[in-house]
Image (cartoon, rainbow, N blue to C red; front, top):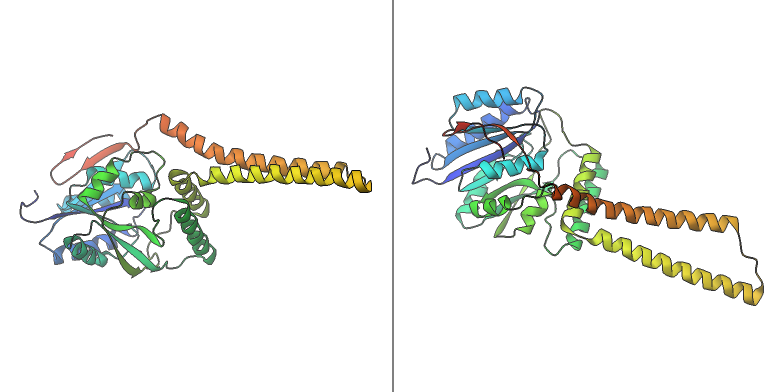
Length: 322
């Protein structure tokens, strides 16, 4: 049970096929927790439908360490939804979100707690470098953050991931945001509260393999745009307006050339080019509109964001679903 004198800290760890890194992560966290006995610790693993030995390894840690809790989701819902499960079930006065791959150093949690004690409510880790990552991916990531920042009414933090400490106030705010298609990095910025930046050098993944490919990251970027801004719709409107204006100018210029100089009007090639161009513009606009309509369709179903198969905690040992 939690002490009435000490503050409680929950470490939230979304996990998907992380059997290679879990033993090393646990040792690093155990060393951290043992070095700070003034806090009451909870390590909350969220098994996001792993198909390797991740769940059995977490269950073994749970049996041997009463600071371990875990949620086993009914299937793989994705990291964004797994984090919401962590917010729903965490018991701490604050929560630290950290990946299981050890690219985010657990020792940085000490600094986060120090700033939390000073009154900061969202202490986030900003990367000085992004570790071993393809050059094109880095450039596209920065381009995405810049575009999203310029198109929203709140500041979007660049080179900042999910590794951060959140006060209970922030956790309760995030629990209210129940959209199914989630972009949590944007939600962290949207809720506001008193923020503090910590700089660090991100390590390369040492154990296991990344579960994010290029197209998944593109999908996450689309989620970011469609969740927080309607600028793509406005861009489609502007392109349509400019295209219509250009077509009108071209028509007038063609009539002038025929009337004044008797120039012949190019027929089939011009017609095909115009039709293909207008068709492409229309398809792009329909695609952008479809992304927003698709989100409305998904949210209108009002399905639960995730389902829990099993929840085990140091003072709760049951099955639950939300």
